[in-house]
Structure formats: C-alpha cells, structure tokens
Amino acid sequence: MKNKLKKLNRFGFGCILFSVILLSCDKDILNQLPKDTLTKTFIWSDSQGAIQFVNGIYGNLHSGFDRNYEGWGKGIYLLDGTTDDGDVCMPWTSAEQLQSGEFLPSNAPWAETWADYYNLARKTNVALENLKNLEDESLKNRLIGEVYFLRAMIYHELLRFYGMKSDGNEPTGVPIIDKPLTPDDDLQIPRSTYDEVVNFIISDIDKAMPLLSKKGQVEEGKATTGAAYALKSRVLLYAERWVDAADAANTIINTEYTLFEDYRTLFLEKNNNEVIFAKKFQSPDKVHFGVNNGFDVINSPRSFKGPNDAGWGGCVPTQNFVDSYDMIDGEPQTTSPLFDPSNPYENLDPRFEATVVHNGSVFRGHTMEMYPGGADVTFEPEDSKTGYQLRKFHEEQFPVYSKSSDQDWIYFRYAEVLLNYAEAKNEASGPDGSVYNAINTIRQRAGIPDLSGGLSKDAMREKIRNERRVELVFEDHRFFDIRRWRIAENLLNGPLIGMKIEKVGDTFEYTRYEFETRSFPAKLYVFPIPQSEIEKNPAAKQIAGW
Image 1 (cartoon, rainbow, N blue to C red):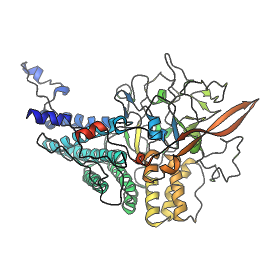
Image 2 (image 1 turned 120 degrees about the horizontal axis):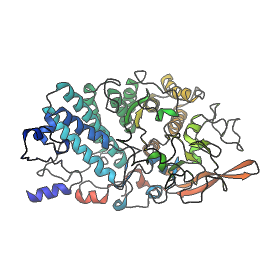
Image 3 (image 1 turned 30 degrees about the horizontal axis):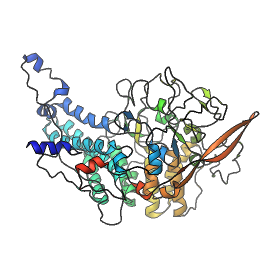
Image 4 (image 1 turned 180 degrees about the vertical axis):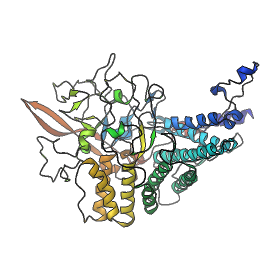
C-alpha cells in the first residue's frame, strides 16, 4: 500500500487528500470547525463547503491575466504576444522560445499548464462523485451542472494546448480521466483521439445544460446556459464540425446577450450585457498578480514610473497587426483613398485607437513620444521594437503601481459567438444573409460600413478571419486560430514588421522595418507534454515531432 501511495503521488494528475482532524476540544470549538480543515463528509453534506470547493475550481482556471508562469508569476505575457499580431518586450521571459520553437519538453514555456489543468480536472471528478450527498436538491443540481461545464472547459483548454486535429484515428488528443483515481488504478493513461476528447467535452456540456441557469439568474462569474452554448460552439468550431458549431452559436444569438455599445470600455465594465462567461477579479480579495501589480504594470512601457519601479514593457502590437484594420470607409488600407502613409493612423477603424497606443496617442494622460529623443524611448531592453504599445484592457485613470489590477478576464463574449457562427455557417453552406448579418453587426458597433455583397465562400472566409483578428486581438484567440487554420507556418517563418518613427522638425516620418525574424517549426502547432509529466505517465506519448 505504501508503494502504491508513493506511485500515485508521483503521477501528474494526483488524487485529492482530505484531512481528518481529531480534536479533543469542547462542543463549541467543534461547532466552529475551520473551513481549511473540513473532512470529506463535512464538505459534501454542507452546502457552504460544497460551494467553496466548486468556487475553488472557478478561481484556479487559467486566464490571460493570471496564467501560472513558472510557479512565481501570473499573466506575465499574453499568448497573442507570440503571434504575428504581437511581440513581448520582456527578453527574460519564455516568449522568445515560443517565437522560435527552440526549446525541449524539459524546458517548455508555460509548462505548468498541463499539471494545473489535470489537477483541476481531478477536482471536478471528485466533486461529481460526491455532490450527490448534498441534501439541498436545487443547489446539488446547479453545482453538478457547473462542474460538468468546468470539466468541459478544462478539457477544451488541454485539447487546444496539447492536442491537434488529425484525419485518422491517431491518438492526438489528450488523456481522458473521468473519475477520481485510486492507488489501485492503472496510472498509465494514453492519449485519446482528438474526436474522442471532443465527444467527451460535448457530452459534459450536454449534461450541464439542463442544470444551468440563464444569465441574471445566478451569481456573475458562474456557468450559465449561455456559457455552455458558447463553449460548445467554440469546441465544435475547432473540430470543424461546421453545422453543429453554427447551430450551437445560433442558439444564443438574439437572446439575452447583445453587443456592448463601446468597444473600448466593454473590457472594463464588469458584468456588461456582452459578457457570457468571465473570470472574476475584485481587489483586494482577488487580483491578477500581487498588490499594486498585474496587467497594467506588466503592460505599460518603461517610461511610466512608479515609486520603486517602472512598467515592464509587456505585450505590444506589430505593424503586421495594424495593417489588418480597415479604413473608416470599410476598405483595406492598401486600396482605400483615405489612407495616407505620412499620417498612417488617421481614418482607421475606431477599434484601432481603442486597442493600440501609437506615437502621438494620449495614454494614461501623457502624449506618447515613441521616437529617438522622445520621452517614451528609454533605450532599455524592454522598449517596444514595434513602435506601438497596447491600450486594450488598461485602466488608464490609475497611475501604475497605484492599484492592484482586477479587470475581469472574459472567456466568452457575444461578439465571439457571432464570429463563431459566421465562420461555421460559411464553411457549412457559404455566405448567406445570416453570415453577413453576424459580421455586419460587429462592424456596425465598431462604426465601419457593412461588408460588400456578392462575396464567394473563399472571399468571405478571409473577411471573417480578419474580422476575428481585429475584434478579438490579445484575447488569446489568435494564438490558437492560426494553429487550427494551419496558417502559422506561413505567417511566422520570416520577418515581422514594426514602425520606425523619426521626428523631423515639427513633423514625423514613418518607416516600416523588419524588427525581428521568427521561425515556426511544424511541431509548434502543439505544445509538448512537459518531460516531467511524460516520465510519470509514459503512455501519454509526445506527438508532432516532440
């Protein structure tokens, strides 16, 4: 038995251990049993204990703002900073490895993700086994629905990091563990096929749906039927099950969700009508990364100073991304008569100013000087090489280091559902009126003209992909989109473009230049399982050349 326990503790997915506390105290003390010493029986017969257990799963889901970085950091850089849309200005991070593919399973970026998610999956399995003991029938059903949703969410994340779609029956998914493991279980668990994992996720979502409430009928930040359909639409979209993906997205179109009126502030206005599911933060109890730190500090330039330090540089947009914005006449920059290369930021899609900080922008109350000799070029290693900084998500009214960042991370919002529908419907049957309507609804909120009619399926595909790129930038979609579309090799094998700014008298000269050359070996379409986890479970073999 001792050897089995040792074996189980070495296994990356682990098992949950409950402490049984023996107290020789009086009755009053026993009636005040602390929550951190709850016994297994007490957790699952006590409503508050069960709620706290499930809340712990919600709270430990990774997000762009607090993804576990090497065990010490939270949200150090956004994944989109390693795509053609972005760069990471902090040379000491693992971003450079992701931008080149020069790493091994033994030192992979974001290596904590695998174990973190399987630990959460383990907790969902424990909850599903024990929630039946709750006496409150209504609460029991609600929590079971939430846990099925959470397990589906966890496996979706594992699959898009560590799995890849294949045409055959090769095991290119991830290991499925659907029950709490014991020392007597076979702990060598191979990968399932991609489709098997997708089917497992969809099954969990379908089990959750009848047990979940609608938006407004449950506490914000908890799973709802809308969140379940949004997750289902994304999972099926990634799996290229076009008809089913479109149907799932269409189920919540024109329901209780709408586009928030202002693109800039929708990421700051908590619980607005566009948010379908978000990770909740609220200072001082739940923040991104420490006191007076987090997204705003990490993603401000070095020229913005605090009492003892400055902004970290963070993730910044590239010129490649800036080029993707249409002009306010609805035409691309390459064909619109409104585009002026000597004044390249005038008349762009209004989402540009809401997302990107450029030379001459007012950012945090300061007019940016992003040219040699200007206040925002410090010649430190963390200076932006692209000529841009990121505005999206920032609470600009607070000086850096004066507030703990606590913006909610939005996992699903209505605009994504519209984009999911448009892509899936176009792939399934071509660009009918509903496809145009989904895309044009988003463009109308942005303040740019509708798409022109008469597009072919291929032409509409490119329009949808570009709209998705612009609308969802730095929300950690591009990182996965260019992988599932299998276009990353075309975009990331070669130079990336920045903007060099020079001040000449009272005017500025803007020159595009190659700031960095990247490489994208084919194996980067999927993350390797960390070597330490392979050693615990050799049956889960590496794929894609890792």
